[in-house]
Amino acid sequence: MTEKKRTLVSPKPLARLLPRLRQYRGKLAMAFVCLVIAAGAGLVFPLVIGYLLDAAFELKDRGALDRIALALLGIFAVQAIANFVQVYLLSSTTERVVAGLREDTFSHLIRLSPAFFTERRSGELTSRLSSDLALLQSLLGTWVSELSRQLLFLVGGIIMLTVTNPGLTLTTLAVVPIVVVAAVTFGRALRKASTGVQDRIADAMGTADEAFASIRTVQSFTREQIEATRFRSLLEGVVTAAVHRAKLRAGFFGVVGFVAFASVVAVLWQGGAQVLEGNLTAGSLVAFLFYALTLAAAVGALASLFGNFQEAVGAAQRVFELLDAEATVSEPAVATQLVRPVRGEVQFANVSFRYGTDQPAVLHDVTLHVAPGEVIALVGRSGAGKTTMASLVPRFWDVTSGAITLDGHDVRTLALAELRGAIGIVPQEPTLFSGTIRDNIAYARPNASDAEVEAAARAAHAWEFVERLPEGLATRVGERGVKLSGGQRQRVAIARVFLKNPAVVVLDEATSSLDSESEQLVEEALSELLQHRTTIIIAHRLSTVRRADRVIVMDQGRIVEQGAHDHLMALGGLYSALYNRQFGDTPIEA
Image 1 (cartoon, helix red, strand yellow):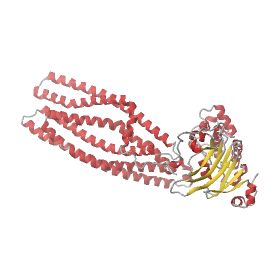
Image 2 (spheres, rainbow, N blue to C red):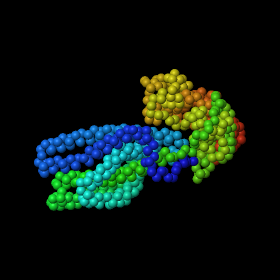
Image 3 (tube, rainbow, N blue to C red):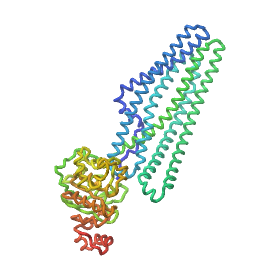
Image 4 (cartoon, helix red, strand yellow):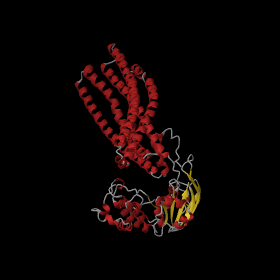
């Protein structure tokens, strides 16, 4: 069953950022005030330049020239201070907003059920958390500021142009409709092209992440060159899409730039004629020209910002798609409380399950009662449904029909933290994090004392190798625990479950890939772990069933046999056939 996703994200995804900005409205208001001051100083500059030129060439007044020059220095000082405050306030706010969005996205993702991650590669998700949010950060950090600045220049420039010379103003503004049409036409294509680039980057990063995660497999099969070629091929797709986007942007900016500065040429020609006719002073023409250049630059900048906006919309849509993903496994509206201590009684009542509406059923009307403290082993051919049954107990998926209960409570009525807190899982391939041995054991209970962590390590027979390490529990295990052997990793994982102290343990053939010495140590650790705990063993090797009170034989999603080993062998059914296929005439150890 897949995670539910809205097929349509909000048509204005950037509007969803506004609630995140509200708590910073004081800083943003101050930044806007500083922006207005800086833009105002910029708009005053051409006017003062006109006065300066007239003082020098028309009036020939040295005193006026000196005063105007000092005034210009004062204007620039005010502008510099306002720009500093505005950039600082906006940048610091942007960092906090994007960090909050990144944190919320990550927190949402790790609460989604495993079904979501079976359809998404981790590299793709990481790309969205990094590159897509980097685009949004750029949008908030520079785009908003520049948009406001250029709009102020545009509006202020039009006002000053009109005040200076209404006739020339009409010539300057003739280009605006052309720019608007170009912006709308190119903008849609830019948004689509930018989303395509980000999608291809996510694909490439997903491939790289898979290769890094499976580096031993890649190198053992000497497939480094093949992986490099595959990654290069994906990068070529990124480059192709990026070049297409670059062509659109180049064409957009080329058209806008030509039209904008063509209007400046028209202003120069028309204004020069008015100077020759004596209707305009040279200083006024230069001031008007500065305003025209300011207006042309603002139009060009706004066109560029519009292109960036379209790219950011695509990035925002990809991020909010993740936030809009709805978990198929959700918290109950009103949670039922488990009675302490948890006894560990598990009941499957007519359970059927399929992974998706378009997928075949994996379990069919399964009914099974596991008494508190009982150890059962699920056996059967590959694909019989053993792992699925065990995964339904902690609600990694929800049943399609029927019910699973823990101590008489439907697991769907229990808070996920309470349900999963009562269940410990020892996987076939243990997952360790790139920290210390202590960090990995205490992952079950971060506030555990060193004495409690050591006690768990001793119970799991992990202390035997930990105490020989130079740094003991502070030894770093490397990414995925690569610095430890398979048996050591498994014992650390068992110690983690010891520290958790669950009522129910799910054991996924934890010794199947170990050497005989490591297997013996892990077996001793498991023997202690399973005492007085309800245990569900997913048995890939039938020798594992020796510790089970009852063997549950599954075939094509149904329970076909159950009982003790000797009883099932006497039946001569599926279990007997599977056992004889593995061991022949060799008797199973008692």
